[in-house]
Image (tube, rainbow over all chains, first blue to last red; front, side, top):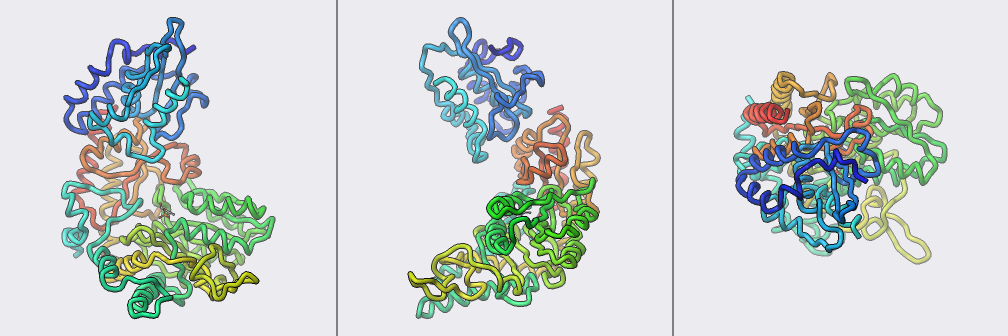
Amino acid sequence: MIPTELLAHPFGQTITLTQLAATLDAAASWEAKNRLLVQLSRQLPDWPAEYKTADCKVSGCESQVWLRQDRSADGHWQVAADSDSRIVKGLLALVLTAYHHQPTNAVQTFDFEGWLQARGMQRFLTASRGNGLRAIVQTIEKQRQ
Amino acid sequence: MFDVAAFKQQFPLLGHYPELIYLDNAATTQKPRCVLDAERAYYETSNANVHRGAHRLAVAATEAYEGARDTVARFLNAASSDEIIFTRGATEALNLLANTVGMLLSPGDEIIVSTLEHHANLVPWQMLAERRQLSILPLGITASGEIDLAELATFLARPRARLLAISHASNAIGSIQDIQAICDMSRQHNCLTAVDGAQAVAHLPVDVQALGCDMYVFSGHKVYAPTGIGVAYIHNKLLQRIPPWQGGGEMIETVAFSGTRYATPPGHLEAGTPPIAQAVGLAAALTWLAQQDRAALLAHETALHQQLEDGLRAIPGVVIHGQAAHKLSLSALTFGHVHPYDVAQFLDAQQIAVRVGHHCAQPLQQALGITSSLRISLAAYNTADDVARCLAVLADTLDMLN
Ligand SMILES: Cc1ncc(COP(=O)(O)O)c(C=O)c1O
């Protein structure tokens, strides 16, 4: 089970992808989008060190990323994540909005990359070879199979 | 007086992006127009394969390619052009050395590799060590980021120490080693020395004969030349003793199923059609660089770096890694709990290009106790305005993120 303190965030429940799309689209410049990601990161809890264990570390990222996923008693996927980078953590907030609190009996197909591209944020996908965001989304989807 | 505006005008990419502040020069430099023109002119007037055709274009191509070898030999002050082997880059040059010179080593022999080497000057030696049962001696660095010469002396005194792999200057923290002293020490112990000059060549004069090193490598793309071309200098005495590594065309004398004879050195180390146009581009870059007042370029870079580090020291929360007495115009930074990646994203939003990560020097980052740093690296086309703007955006960004 994921400790509840790591799940104390609004993404995927009170904050929806539609809302986030609107806010991101309103942030016209790269600078504004960066600032928004930093703001979003502040709404995700910082994990206490004891939860940042090697088994939940996602490799291939620009920064350190930790991710835990589990099924809740009421049949939902629960996802918690943290990073030592504010911007990556802001991106994690976007990922959680798409993947956290989804019913476990529904097959989820979501084109996260397409969604980011539509926001003009493809630079976060192409920035490096062992791309972080891709690795994170793949980790989530693989664990659900 | 060095005219930076006129110098900068020679770089088409910088003209294409007038707002860009390119501070990632240790990764690769931009190319002056004359280098691009030389590659294009080669394709437009001399393109053919080298060393084989019985026609005038093939002769022109061979002359261009072999002429480039002469230019590199002059640039490094090698005793002969035959000591210059073209490769894809510094990485391939180091792999060549490990796979050829490395074959002269016997099980139990030791290779000294410094802690601040780029992975390109560590991993090929590790792979060799595994194959040939050699051991690697990790050579430490001092608190300021220089090679620990006392430890080097003890390592060199070991009876099985055969080869020293060392960089002229560090890509990760900028320290310029006392490479002359290091080469002298190594030679006194009959230890072979392979110098990784990837970061040095664009900034510092190199004279392989004066250094007395056995091997020296660099990449074209870090010295204003195209990608896809690099150089391994191998001293003739060593060159005559080493086996080939890649097989194919060009590197042979005669081929038969009963046995193949290899070309004479250095031909035996260049298998297949070489990067001809890239070699021509490299020669153009080195010729162009030799025509510049290199002392003035270096003085300009050093002044900018002084301005940069003075400014950095005035921004709260900035830690500069590497305090060597002699440094390249490069600074590696961390910012307490603010992640270098975040800072780089905000710099990028203002069109300031820097690098973040481990800079292909993980053992060094481990020694420094950091996982990632932000590197600002200068070249001669950078201006005082570039540095001032970078400092201002950096200060604002840290303010916001804190
Ligand atoms: C010190 C050093 N050695 C080797 C290399 C490898 O060069 P290349 O990737 O061009 O082969 C680099 C470049 O990153 C370097 O900085």
